[in-house]
Image (cartoon, rainbow, N blue to C red; front, side):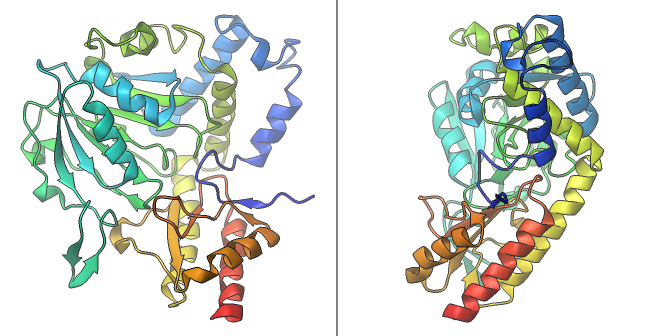
Length: 376
């Protein structure tokens, strides 16, 4: 049976060669006589797996030595609590600022309020006029010159790709230009991690749940500048204290070993396919194809302000929403799965992550055309 094209927002499609390799090594990893799931997290075999994964990730992102790499549990939502517990109090009274551009940045802002003072430095959670056109809430990005960042804040948080809304930051501002040079950026890059080159040195910290572009659910990549580590709030659990996790190379306690192993295989796949620059070229081709068709017809519509459209998560609506069920049923029959939009926004959403090839997007566009021919 042919595998369908999987447009799930996460957990999402993985490279088929990675799945095949994992299957081949399931019972016996490299002659060890064990599955990776059976290994001690402190034994020589898993130490090799974990250290190789870190090394490959460093190579892919060009990480300087003064950044620690940590493989942690809890996902992006877990980091919404772990980040403030580690960083919020580093400049005295706990405080952090947030840029709100969608569901996930709103979640981050709300969770951090449990640990200290929070402030919305900028928000797109209201309608606005851009170039004479009405733009709905959370479909655009506030210009950086309008952001109001508190100088006393421990960090400025933004979600650089909103998985649900489909808004992506293609560039990050320098907080010095915002009048707050001592306030580092903290980036939730979960749904476009490894999809394009990212200059991590421009932020103090980046985190990403693996289950979009980097592996299965269960492991979260945390990359933090070392001078920000070691100032956790007293309430921070020891297993979530970045100082402990970094000092023990992600093995302070038992990490999600199998998820780290799969992520390591994905890192090698990315390296073998042109690195993050190669991913960007492929992702741009896919996004251009899909947005190009959506923009060519009045039957479908993408609501996001064009300069900040996500290359990874493409929401769209049908001009007649009474056709939604028929659209999804037909898509499933055509081997196109997981296209239903998030319940909070409705409509449709195609997540076109690294591991989804151009052929999958081509198949989707052909289905969009055929459905329009039959129902337009």
